[in-house]
Amino acid sequence: MSGFVPRQAGASSREAILGWAALVAAVAIWAGWAVGTRFLFLEASLGTADIVALRFLVAAGLMAPHALRRGLALWRVKPVALAGVVLGSGFAFSLCNTGGLAFAPAAHGGAMTSPLGAVFTGFLAWALIGEPLPRRRLAGLALIAAGAAAIVLASLDGIWGLQAWIGHLLFTAAGLLWAAYTVAVRGARVGVLDAVTLSVVGSAVAFSLPYLLLVGPRFLAAPPWEVAVQGLLHGVLGATVSVILFNRGLVLVGATRAAAVGALTPTLTAVFGIIALGEVPSLMETAGIAILTLGVILASALPPAQARPLAPAPPRP
Image 1: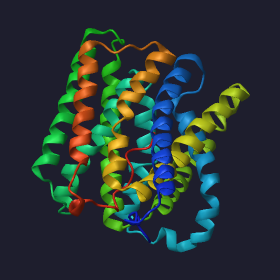
Image 2 (image 1 turned 90 degrees about the vertical axis):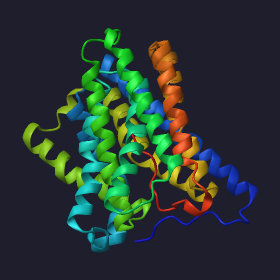
Image 3 (image 1 turned 90 degrees about the horizontal axis):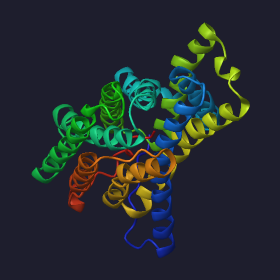
């Protein structure tokens, strides 16, 4: 299975513009996803299990042509790696990441899941597959952890409700699951479309089908507009389009630049949350977001010789 192909040195300015546009679009989708999901939890009727089942039914339909094209070769991945892909970026990750937004603000999800995923990935990759952990990256990971801790401490005053800690635990679990996925993909050298297909088709089989057998298409009891919006938000944009866009941008502008754009996700999520939900972070939360954003940039800014073009995108929503 093929991995990423780094952008050539002579790539045209048109390719660079397309790459930056794809990266910005992907980050905007991630931020918009968190805010949109939080809004729908506050205003709509579907629960986490309903949303996740719908997500992977839609996404599996979108990736079915690629699955048919790849055939059995797509599934020639070691069982441990396959489990890491399906659980780490599929239904288990989505249950945690989506469910967390039922308890904590969108800005907390944007600030915790992806950055903490980077922290866990760094240590797991170092421990399990021998990936270097230079001091500069280690310092960045420490800043990420400190920023996330500041956000958690700031929420202890109960301003976001007494159950915000549940959301924080779920975001942390989502970050750990994504780290398992990242290490599995790096070890198996799985290409972008193959990894997405394994994730969504595997999750549709492992979660969405049992959901349909046990409770039926309960999500169809919701208003048609809500089903359509959830399917678009989760299945089309969150599970597929954003990942493809980000990785296309990574190919065109390089891994380090792509990671730096991805570091904008916490800030952009907080801004969207203020505009759409009125969720204004406190001074301490704002400081925490700023600290962990700096940490993501620092952890990503490796010298070109150490860049790893096979590294997958940051956690998709």
